[in-house]
Length: 119
Image 1 (cartoon, rainbow, N blue to C red):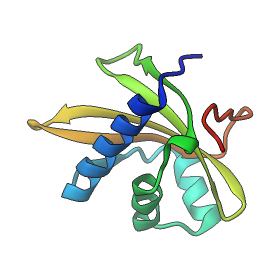
Image 2 (cartoon, one colour):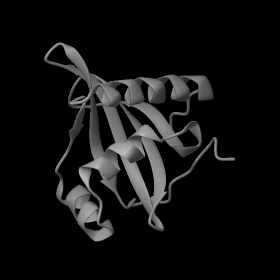
Image 3 (tube, rainbow, N blue to C red):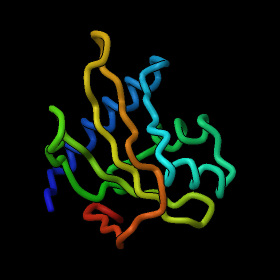
Image 4 (tube, helix red, strand yellow):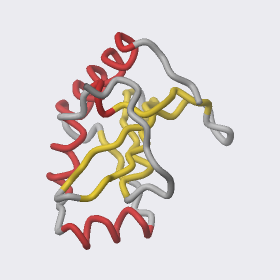
């Protein structure tokens, strides 16, 4: 499991927040497990955006890890929303000449999440 220093996690999250705040900088994957989580918890796309904007170093689980299928790397986080643990998998890549945050996973975890920087 790849773990990086807190300052690298903080830099990644700062970049995520900057990209999302620009607007249209987020691509949410409409995978069945992601959509089911949104439906089950009554979450909107605004709720997802706000969750990502408020991720912190203490929500970090692991990464970055290389994407085996495409250029780039994945970062992994977890957040408790409405009493449910949510697994969040993110990637930043360039789309149409600008950085875009890809939220690949936003669903209940399939395994126990570990938080190396939890307080």
